[in-house]
Length: 487
Ligand SMILES: *Cc1c(COP(=O)(O)O)cnc(C)c1O
Image 1 (tube, rainbow, N blue to C red):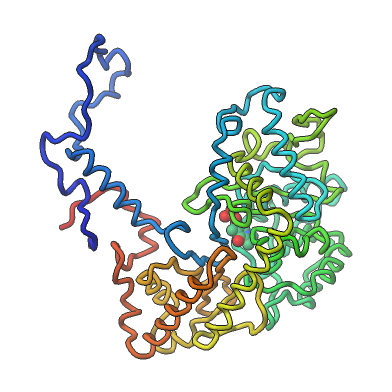
Image 2 (image 1 turned 180 degrees about the vertical axis):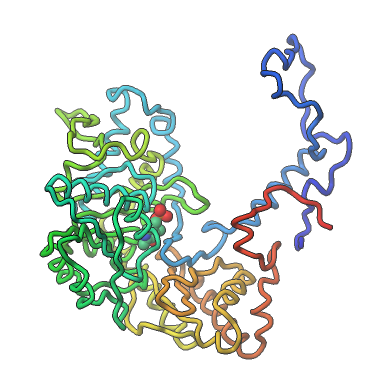
């Protein structure tokens, strides 16, 4: 179903046409058989399209336009913080002294890179209220696992081997129970109350001598701040457990509140969300982990430290859980995050949160007239709506998401968190203008009206994209990765 003018090269191949020109060979020709082992050399020419250089340019440019990214349009994917990635980050990450060094180089020859890592650790300690930070983990989920392995090592060092349970709220990001399981714990779910916050009575009933930790996202994935966090910390610490803070979505509290001050012992951050590392498509991320004093001995090694004005890797950490990644983390993403923090400064970071929260509340209040609002209270960086009203008209949340594609938007997160029926989770971020937010709101209002007056247009969406409605399970399980001629 091609809905664009630019044909793909497979369709316009013409025998003998070539897309390059090389000078006559003026060195002895090499026999492939001298270079490659037997069996590795093709017997027949590959069937490649024969096209001009311009055709192939247009082919790849047309393919690239089929992608949606932050640089091409609004991307309100809840819990993913798809904010603008400032281009100055890219410039700095490409400096020769950062981009062209090797991880096996001698410490004395990469002092600038080590200083940046040390300084970034200091900034992240200040931002989170923690006592030490590792930059090794490559993503949020990897940070979670690293943090939990440290908690495990801590309990084991105290002889507390019966602490095998990690408590996770029912609104938690899916990676939380997954990381706990991979770290060798059993997970226990704690319920949310009707305000969307952790139910304290339920928490008290599941905490005990087998509690290793409580994992919490605050604000939680409903975009709500856990107001009873101090009391929750007392309950968990009182039972000898640790508090883990999922800081993937720090956009809501940046330079306003610190996990360390709320009573948390471990926190991971997603530098590829809050701190403007580009993400999506499985690209490199960075999930640093901060810890309080009593967990420092268990941090992955090495840690960058400063000795007599020299920056060095400290490997002398006998209780360390070891390395969690080859070398020292995704350095390029750390350079980007560092550039962002330094270019924003403390006041800039505070403004990030204020505007992220303002944008989310503005959209939530305007959309609440047309969609269900399960939790009618101020939100933080994101909010959830429910498509229950539209479902009664035969239009499901999935249809609404697909219809948004026709307006040029990436849909919000849908059907998550699991505790809201027909959930639509919107995170606008601070980098969007009021005009963009208004255009999106207008599209959502139009879709709500279509659901009442002309539901087919929503049920059959998208109408303007190259590919229409796909079977998502088959697309993920049995992807067709090669061009196939249309019948
Ligand atoms: C994105 C996210 C994660 C996972 O981060 P990855 O880098 O994708 O592994 C964990 N928790 C929350 C709340 C998130 O939003």
